[in-house]
Image (cartoon, rainbow, N blue to C red; front, top):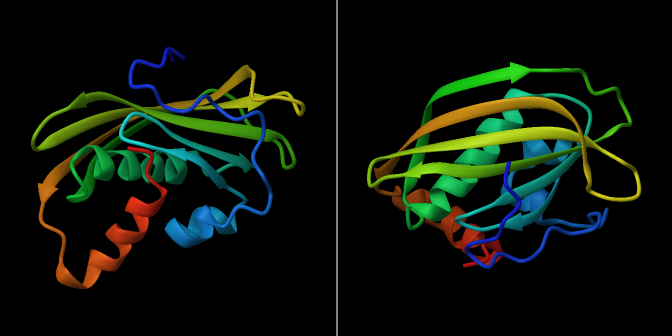
Length: 158
């Protein structure tokens, strides 16, 4: 993926803080497998993990980004294509990034890559998985879900 920053997102962090509570608030299942959210905006969603579960990661990152990019409308993934290129052993630092390929009024397509990083930086090393997620993104938010959207807005870098 291109690391250019046309939307003036904050630069990628050197390494995440292990005390971050953003992930536990926004996505408890990803938090349970060791992810930490670092950047969340309509142009980039950035997380860190130790270990596997690439498809869950791809769907979660694309969904978070699509919801923000759609103006915080309800989103639903309806297609996931993923290539698993190599394994990540327990304890290896794996980073993930989602970038929108197409942001339409009703449909969005996001590309998600996971790669192994050196322990001292987020420098890309070995691609672990590459995926595309297609999402429907023009549905209204149910009233009972509005508090979740409000919470996401507090973390989104708009």
